[in-house]
Length: 420
Image 1 (cartoon, rainbow, N blue to C red):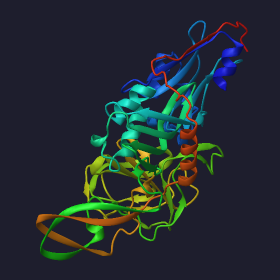
Image 2 (image 1 turned 60 degrees about the vertical axis):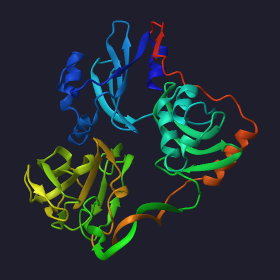
Image 3 (image 1 turned 180 degrees about the horizontal axis):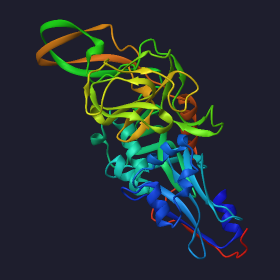
Image 4 (image 1 turned 45 degrees about the horizontal axis):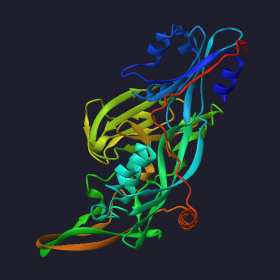
């Protein structure tokens, strides 16, 4: 909305930019000849979000006829963005964090197989991210090597757009493959992985070997790749959210973590083996410990009353690394626990094993003969029947699929000289 109104009221142009490698927000201000005094007006709570601007992130600038910056929108995640704007009367720049406005629409398409699903979707619809998501959906459910020319893949997907351009990766809801007279539905879970059934309890196969030498019981929680809980007797008071109403600031802000309520002094536990990469004060987070784990994970433990580990120290899963407190910007004693994977905040509760200890499994040591073991897991498949009906309705009366033009750069210019 701010782009549309500003463009209509005075001569301006909108351009798409990429955040440079190693560039800080202070560097960006300097490149625009904007005094660093604006940084002093930013609250300590909001300063921490400046470090979440990612290298290569797309952002938008609105400039006047003299090429001076009028406004800039810089994403700090999928839902929120930094707004840097020049006030009309004073000419001063102001800083704010606001929700990102985007459109969300459902599309349908049918692609005829000529080589493989990934290449054919990319060639037909001009949306590489959609081709990747189709590949993710089909993996493990369809042997794409057995597909023949002329087979057809129909699917429904949701795509967010911003200023007419694809915004973040699409989400494929359901697909149907017509191959050599057979039809197979593939249902997508929340993460975009495919299943041939719409049931919440899904079967999957584990390959092994048959000749048993011996069996042994092992603790389920001792597996190094499993993440435990950051404290015992966990009680969640605030969940992960990309757009949450802040209880202190009374504004929308991202909440990139999970809050656990606990008494002051409750021991905090390392969720997995790793190396302490930070132990100190961090603006609104107060006393903080950050630990790097295998697999690209980094865990963060905030608002501690006292830290027990130092930077560079190696810790074991379950080791006490500090104690619950209320330092920094906090409404009371609690743990703010954050988890990053490859530099992006993720929902910790999708990774943490709620039962960190206890329980056993029987491990078989086998040789020679291959065997298959069927196991089950709970999967959330939202609106499976509704999406199936939509796909069948589309196939009954197919329309020409929308083709994305990824080569057209975004550039707008309006010639109204009246400046508001």
